[in-house]
Image (tube, rainbow, N blue to C red; front, side, top):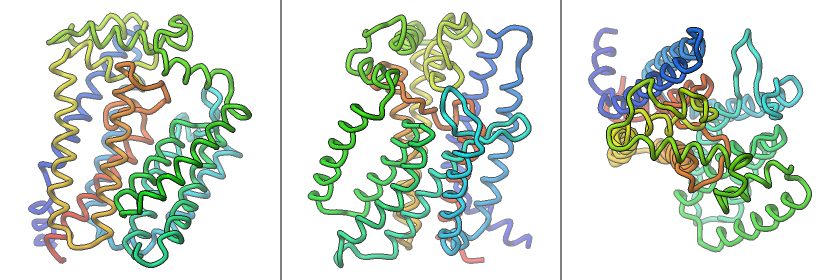
Length: 368
């Protein structure tokens, strides 16, 4: 037993884990800072986030110590579990800003789609690691797409188009990694164009159309749909090189910046910690990505490689979209910044993913 623990700690990739821990610390500092501006010693969200982080880190270390083959074996059941969660939330979920995507558990909100992102990566990693694209690639394209489409459709029905976009991105990333022929991407483009046109004409609500128009022209209607982007850009620019200091960001402290602890936490980091703080956040993410890619060279199983590349894709896409939202080059689609933004479901799900990555890395080095 002692030997197993020693081998586990020795082969745990602490360099990969370190930037994740630092990103969590950045997020907690800024969530605390936002709480200062709310007055009345309202630190409830900060305290809840601390609990989410602790629970997530415990899960990370537990999962890292478990053989990842167990996830592989039970992945079909995990997929069904994710499916049940998404169906159940449509009937029994709690609505927030018109989206029925949360379970209310004793005052805490559980957002199933965050776990489903992990489930989709697991499903696709198992599927692509067990097939060859040289034989009937169209079949594999359809099956993998159908497996993803079920989740995407259920999330879109909430409606949560930001999360649905992430699920689409996960599937697209995985089929790129799998090495599908370019003609399949032409098919995807055609489907997206037809679907997009239909959604715009029939399904999209007016506020969703306004978001897209604001994306095409960020200065469009700056007192309404463009307000969030305008305030975020002001916050990012106001930080200068060194920032205004923790608790001294005018945009977040004076509540000009909405959703400052969620969607726009990068703007808070930029205003209070300046260009230096923003670059440190990007550096920590980059170190995590680099370390994951460096470990892939040592992994001798396809499932592990697919899972790690899928996980990198998810975290990179969410990071890219969130930062793009904050600096005004992408639309506001409600995507949080991994490991920094307030939110228990996302934090725990992302740390679960890191735990699986660590398990794959550890198992590639030792057998116990």
